[in-house]
Image (cartoon, rainbow, N blue to C red; front, side):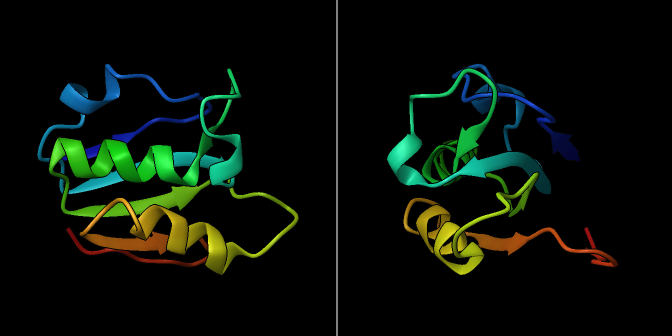
Amino acid sequence: MLVYTADSAFQESFIPFSKEADLLITDTNFYQDMAGKSKVHMASVEAGQIAQEAGVKKLLLSHLPQKGSLEQLQKEAESVFSGETKLAEKGLKIHL
């Protein structure tokens, strides 16, 4: 099962909605210092929290920020989520 949050801030309802998904694709436009401060995009740690609590297999961070370190964004999500985490990129293929 694939779950895609599109343009959205963190919502508790994403956790049961994403339950045991093979792949969760999240709008991850902010670093952890913005967690809980946006009504339109998620922070890295919020994406990781949803993935961890929902028990998903893989997390794909999408709608990435234009500034800053994308590796930092990934590491922040991985600090919360114990599964596989990737950054979206042109041509990326993921096998479910």
